[in-house]
Length: 268
Image (tube, rainbow, N blue to C red; front, side, top):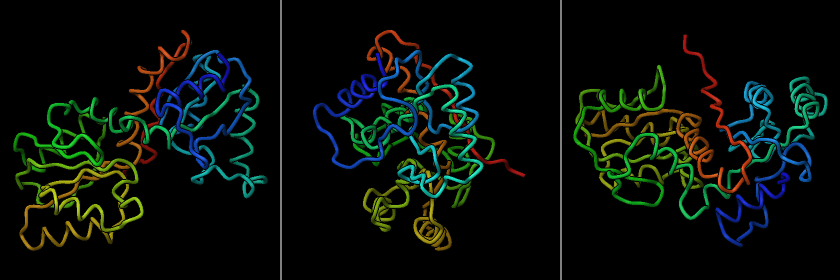
């Protein structure tokens, strides 16, 4: 299979014959006619991920997020940038195709990023509503215990919370990636917490004047509200891990490998 055939198979499997007129799901590097030797799936095509793809003999990387630092991988502003130049040369030297799989992934029959996270945390039988944003009914635990659960399941050493660590919680919402920014409606996360009577929202990205401020005020008023912030990458990486499984039957026997992009942060 060549690169374009892999792309077409993925989009068709995701959304049938539907195609977006405008999308960020573009071939960022390489030729659509290159014969694929192996595929890597990952949250982001970082330098480390590229090196791991080279090491395992893959010449196609499927990344959920951009490669060149803006939402639609604009590169006009990067032509003299030393970071871009070295990264581009690394991809070109090893003839690696990089394709972004974002819009179609979230628009699939079920949102495949949520699917991967749900599988990773094992909450398939706890869903209250099966369409994102997901809401769950879990056995009652403290916020501190719930935070420890996510640290363990998502392989984290540190995460952020807002709320009383000893508060009891059983109704949980999850907003992966940029979902907790509201997706165009800043009030959406707060409405979700109110309308679904949620104790906790687990978030990817945050803005400190929206949901964070709302939950913090609720805490100061003695209300049973909290949030757990795991970050964009830790909330979405699992969709790309899950992708390595469902992609294999579509890839004509090509090796498919998941590479964890890992959190970008060090904590001092």
